[in-house]
Length: 402
Image (spheres, helix red, strand yellow):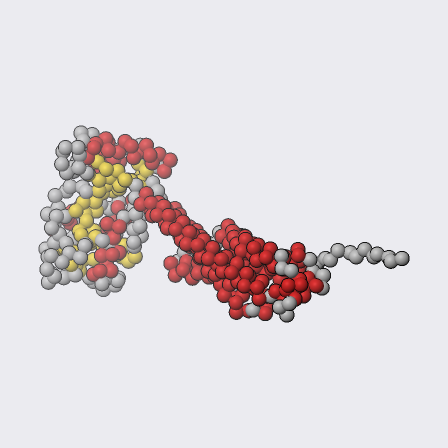
């Protein structure tokens, strides 16, 4: 009488599963590194794009918080069938009477007056610089800072003195006012008493030389026409003030008044950056997909090369599920290594570029978690077919290749 002993089903412990999955990586190191590199580039690109986008957005929000979003810029524009418009003489006073308005200042331009380092430069070479007539409140209204010297409110308004915008000072080669410096404005010499810091919300002022109203009238034949009015408004009533401003400053022709909020330009820039971010994310996803195809290709070749190994393991008791798990685990390991490397690469790129721009380094959690998740999903999908193919290999046919 023959006794049949039931054998326990073959089992594969998690530790043994991990060791089996790492066999291919250890024996084919160069191929494994190159396969993981595709995943690493894709994940790195996506993490870097998200990190740089978040860092840039943080910098923009800091700018807006510092500059404020409650400034309105009022200018004359062409009316319907009326031709070029001008702001009335009482426009500044009328704007200051609007309830939510906190502070008002204005600037005008001097026709034919340009900015030169000396009086030997031809009049045709303007360099894109202009002379702007400003009132004493301008620096406070724009929430600007002085890089050196003083503003017009601290200088004598009757003397030919000027304050240079940041771009103007740079183009004229004037870095400070430690030594007395003069510039040629119109047909007069003006002493430089200050240099302004960059104004993110008023780039036109950066490219100008500012003079007082009294000095402009005395030395530059200023006609007193106001070109732009800057208004700071209670933030909670910015929209209401914007709506009533045209009819307030020019009751007869409100359609000849244009009211804009300079901070909108920064927000538009952020919207453009968001569109660009989505484009780069798409390119990163393509790179990730290519990396997944590379892993699938490597795993298929690996199954073909290791038929003998598969047959031997099957002969020693490994089940089809064990073989499938081995090759699927190998694919996941490749993708995981690429994912970790990609996250680190993206973080380094973000940190390096953000530091060069003076931004805070921000890497969103979704970029790290999403990057690793995407890598593992790509690895699972890429390894599924090779694993199934390996599991279907016949032990007898495979052992013939040994």
